[in-house]
Length: 433
Image (cartoon, rainbow, N blue to C red; front, side, top):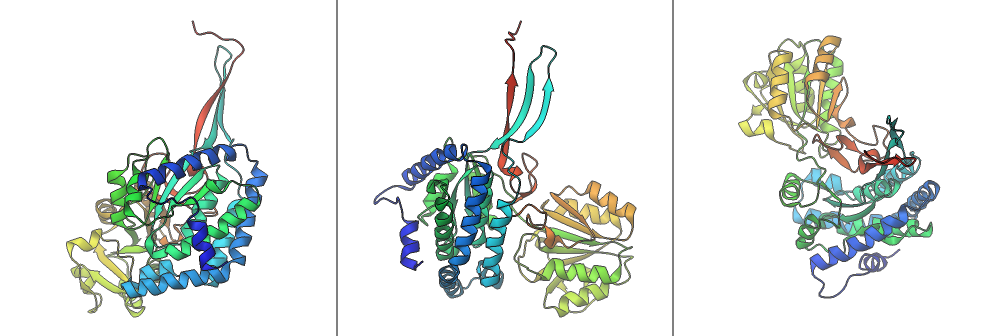
């Protein structure tokens, strides 16, 4: 598969002088028609199509990695941060992981048709609630080329069509991955329009997606704060999103020192650019090994910004500003505060958490249960790294994003989160009096 082939595949259906609004409307209408075909597609056929797509991803490795090299070179020339380049970069191992995730989604149970509940009314009417696809889902994302495959796989497996709009940073990577996915899906009889990549980087096309009410059923943004804020402000279509990943780890007085040091280091430094990366470390005043935890992070190359008590633990800790407690760094930078017990930690998290993922490290079961009950985040953890905030790690195969709102879906959004339900009513001639 050559770059020319990829570009040609990406431009299928593109028409000269077509406005962004007309382009989005045409692709959305094609996607909705394809979604109706998916409704007639068997579970086995959808699974086989995803396995074929995974095979195509593996076969297309040279072309995909060559395309990614173009994106990396362009990103370096633009001065993208190390964390952003890490999100963007593909290698053989990461591409194999993308293909594996597609296969894992193929192996998951199809949620469509699941009977959620049944009941019978006194008049004999039989009621049931059954899972159905949402319809056509628009995904707007930045930097991460794996989202192209993850979103396509999850939407298809749950019977939805998808219209994807990737960021310019991953332009070549997204096109190469989409070409491979399309080849695999169509070889198994899935209509090409079921999963489409918007063939333009015109920012006006994003606005056209956000206002395509009646054509696009839900928007999922994945990217930086400015992207998500724009989507939430401008959308006339329901949005499933999180704005920030300001994740906390609280080291309780009863934490095991070795565990605390290991989890703090992993939660921050395993991959600093993921949304589950710890951005604030809270250390209990009664925890005896705070200096060792801080030293381990500093020695690993992490810049720490702390309050007065945190700075007293190590002279290398810088002064934290008020803004630091509300900042998602996505880099090797961490804010650190020393707090007076569990209540103070809970207060700090309530004031500054983005309700994504927050964790406690403790050997006290009662403290752990209080933390689980009182922290109002989509994911709350005990004695585990916040880097586990990931659909694959939760056994969901992959995720389309992590939702921090309170409606429809929360936490890693995978197959079930991409469905809604309808009521089925079966009668024997009942008429309402």
